[in-house]
Image (cartoon, rainbow, N blue to C red; front, side, top):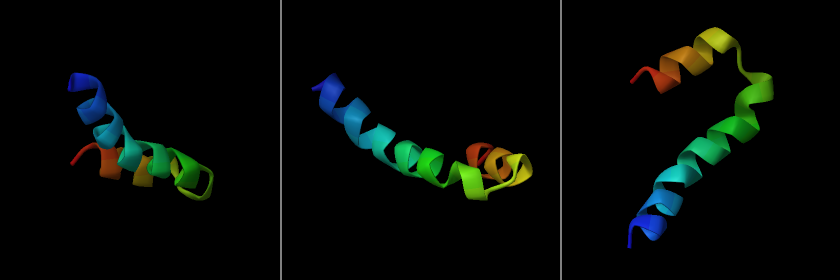
Length: 34
C-alpha cells in the first residue's frame, strides 16, 4: 500500500531530523542532496 511505503521511506528522514540539531546546515544539505 502507498501509505505503508511512504511510512517506511519516511523513517530514515525522521531519524535524520532527530539528529538535525547536532548537524550543520551544510551537512544536512549534503545528505539531502544525494
